[in-house]
Image 1 (cartoon, helix red, strand yellow):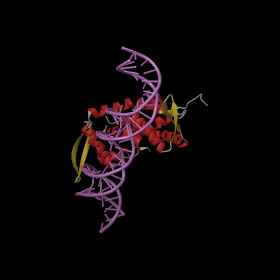
Image 2 (spheres, rainbow over the protein chains, first blue to last red):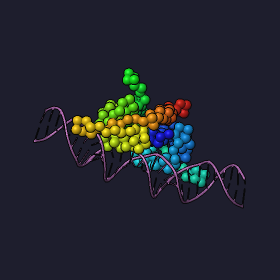
Image 3 (cartoon, chains in turn cyan, yellow, green, blue):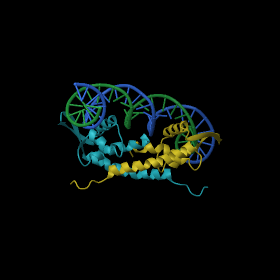
Length: 106
Length: 106
DNA sequence: TGTTATACATCGTAATACGATGTATATTAT
DNA sequence: ATAATATACATCGTATTACGATGTATAACA
């Protein structure tokens, strides 16, 4: 899979992964795996970015000796997902341009 | 529009723009404009990349005192478009993951 | 004479995905 | 007992990349 093609979906995908229930890094990766594989370093970069953009909030929880950071989606984050849906309409138009079969010139 | 979202479409879009007829930089930009806006510096970067990847070939033509470089899609380039179509199936699966509405937990 | 359109080209930069690597504990396999 | 795997987060360096800014040059038009 072309990496570039995934790029625009990464942020929205992480937001979607925590949309219905707060989650933490390791689990987010596992939940997304069937749809989109992402390395840990990539995920943590994205989580930092989303936090900086006020799309998510973080809360640390001690769990069996290990640290867990639970991420919670904010109103801003939910809005980001809606924005994504809007953008997708344009993306589909571009997709149609790319895949259209020209008729009448052969 | 989120820039990241466009990234994966750029190369395929340029290939699509010359698929049915050889074209040159300035015209490619104008043809794509209704679907996807791209700066000149971006296009020439992409054309260089596609040429390096043997997706297109170039031929210079003198036209009214000005230089024109006509780009022609190769078999490799056509294959790239087909690859894009294949990848799109996965992209759609990811899209569904992002936009799905969870039922039964509220 | 000045502006816009046509046409290609390069440089610098900021954003970004990811491999490599590191820390630390718990569980499972050999 | 020991090795390997799973869990869990974190950082550094790097290559790719889109694009604004800028440059060169001619033709058409106001």
